[in-house]
Image (tube, rainbow, N blue to C red; front, side, top):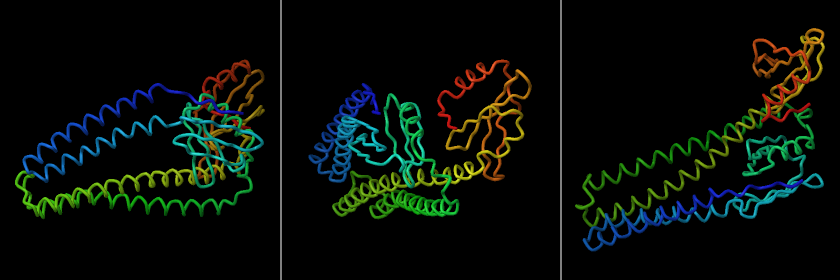
Length: 322
């Protein structure tokens, strides 16, 4: 089975927008910088050329936008997934390495043991997700809950470390401003001496370095947060799967049951009376380790086919599993 990637014209519009905006910023601040050089205002010159460089970098972003999914493909064959997507990211894994999969609109989300992979702009994302879910092994039955909890604690510590590091580097953005103002005695750029110019140059380099470091740490922190949330969902999923068939005897004449969202939700179809059919949506509660109602009462139908039509309409974006 192959993935069909959508080619979006919005990508090219954004490319042009970034090119024109970056070029304008770079040219305008460069002209201001040249004027400041002629006026011998070195600090103002440094300020202007710093923003000129940022404008160029802003324009260069268009290259990365243009290259996104440019040679994208996805192929599922012989129990393996081979893909290239995004900015040249490659994926070569066995289907059994995937613990679960979700489709969110035209995006496919693959869950691995300690990672999550997003594949964007897939026209047939839902079909691919259903195909993967039908073929991956439900290994959660053999997973030790204590092992899952240990991974959860490990991912939590990792996330907290990166979060603290991100907050500290973010605070240094203001610390840099503080020591620069203190050492230059709060003077305006036009009144800077040569020693003040040196201090301001050091400040500019320190601030750029801190901004880059903060963004890198924030990006890593975001990934660690996603892994942390996956580990929480994994604990809930494993627990729900172990109690998959609990408390079904409270429903008379159970016809079928369907699960979704990593087995944490289930739909029970039953017949409370002769020629009357109904369904109830439940979610697994981790605190009580039991299934709780999502509705106050079940909705009744006189014909079973009408009930299934209602389910298809209400849960059209959800992939139901047995």
